[in-house]
Image (cartoon, rainbow, N blue to C red; front, side, top):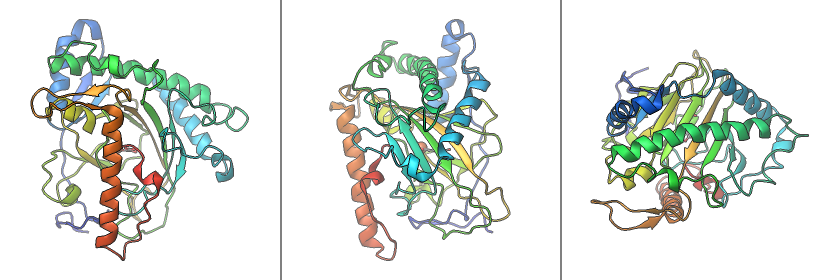
Length: 351
Ligand SMILES: O=C(O)CCC(=O)C(=O)O
Ligand SMILES: [Fe+2]
């Protein structure tokens, strides 16, 4: 398989991967209060270039991460008829979906299922203790832990950009009803022995709509790749150089999202990333990952200082991003009649 061919079609083959090795910065959060200036420097270096970095010594115990993965695994192991009791509600960006997220970079559904969880208005979406005894208590604890790490990072990003230290954290207030922070548990199905058409990915190339994503993955379950540089020269970066992101167990992979890229007048970089569908001969077993998306509260006003001085609420920002996605899918459908694109509400789920 060629690793140098240039693929420019939106439905680029997941097997033709121009790839390169890049080093990702490690942001060490240990001794946070005393090392804050050093942390800000390292973090800003990574966030203003690759937009992807590892966070270590973040304070979440590795056993807590394993416990969360186990709870996620156990939830996804339930029969679909049980999971379907908690269907995705796009207006709340919460609930369960399977083979339903279609991205404009592929035009076909990601090979995955996911369960999204928010902090408020979730009573009918958290799986009952009868259906899944561990999922809710484990998930709620884990979300608080992710929020603590996010608070440290958002504080450093605010200071690094020359804002007051609580500039971002006060807009990501999990105690407010309109908080949009979300935990997404992901399960990429076992595809052992299967070969898919080239446009199929576990997660098609995309940027996240949010401010900051914390991503957890398990050892040996790789596949995440990043294409640093929004200036990616081909459509969705498909023909550009992608780098595998393979963290050590317990490290958090963090990435900058579109919302904070605009807020920072493009200083912080939200970059394309994707998850490959492994091919026969590689490990094609299941892959589990967990993403915690920080998004500013719905009513928070995002206003840049130079390039994007026009104010926009976070709610409106996300609505516009979803509409852009929807339009892009419609255009793709019109352009490629042979690609079966059925944009449903789920095709617009955030990030
Ligand atoms: O599963 C992964 O590693 C990445 C998932 C992702 O990028 C997303 O859900 O936005
Ligand atoms: Fe993502």
